[in-house]
Length: 184
Image 1 (cartoon, rainbow, N blue to C red):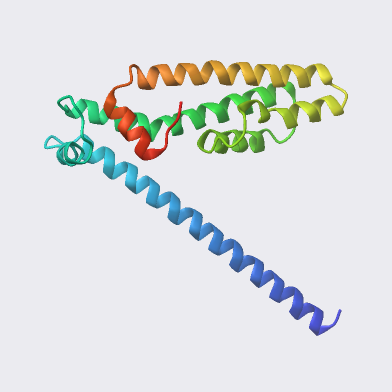
Image 2: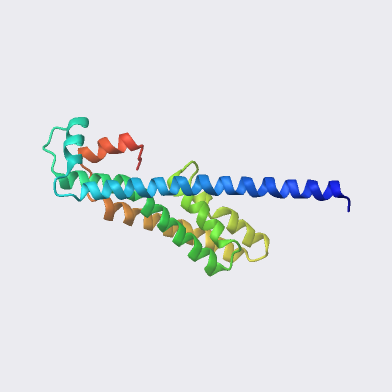
């Protein structure tokens, strides 16, 4: 091995390490910012003086009197519902992939978690690659069970999470949903 090839390998390793460090830094910075935002928001919503009530009263014109509990319920629904939904999707997906003996169960959970936040495709597409992989490996019955069970469980869990979190939809929730881009 020549010195030039060793230097090239070392340079590649240093570049890769630097890229991974910057990626980790960006991800951790975003995560810390999101956690700080949600923490401060919930702290302000639970304070006795409730400064956000006056801000939202001024910003969102509504035809009914705003009570702080309406705002807390609506903001909790808008901000925490996607997180609760994504966590439920991830747990259900990893559970059924593990039960049927599929490979890369945590990858399927990550894909399902991200899909709950950014639903750019139908939900039934999430378990499809794992079901097809099981069918190709020769256990097509487990593949069909995997697909059908995940699809049914996600549908049931979505409905339960929506019912438990939202209850009845009020005009403030509709206004905040438009503001944050939530769709049902």
